[in-house]
Length: 123
Image (cartoon, rainbow, N blue to C red):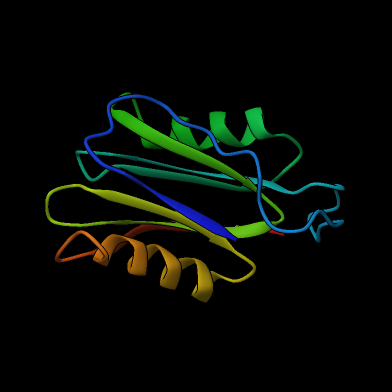
């Protein structure tokens, strides 16, 4: 499990590590997912895909041209939380509840008015 915060983010970032490696329920050895968000309330998500690039491309295509942040993850769940100033926190864990809880805790550590912007599970 892990998290990090993105403040004033204007580029793209990828995290390729997540929880223990295990065969996924998606039918592939590694079940990749991705989340993407923008400053304009757009969001995209993908789950259960064969590769990190495929997951990232699908999430970005759903989000649209204004997406400025995306994360990929494997065999886990992930969530983005965002505060009223658009400070973003990303967290991955073995369940949706833990991912959302971790993202909210990370966001609240420096932000106010945090809410979950997007989540997905890829196991």
